[in-house]
Image (tube, rainbow, N blue to C red; front, side):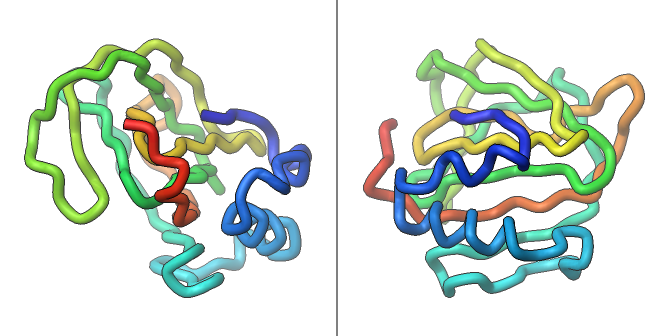
Length: 153
């Protein structure tokens, strides 16, 4: 997991070729001009899902993980909470096309917005979309970066 500000995003180039593609795109575009839905960057290797999301309370939610894709998440308006888990947990639903859910407590938490981003790598349990006292919905972008070779689950 990496949490940083967009002004430092280019510091992470060189880790993976698909992350480099995403960074090059993100630093050259106006993120607020991206339409709702999927924006193709490099086919199935890098794409962006822009959405308006209602945030949920922490209670009753389960962390998710992916085997193929890293998630680079950033809020364009608002600021959602997120969690990152280090305990392996147990499956709470059957794994389906590149998303699974486990029951595991948060080890690290943070809040997006204000130019911050977070990257969750394949296999890392993460809990996005958590409501904050002053924020119940966000306009956000989730950059899906194919990195199954970095899976650690």
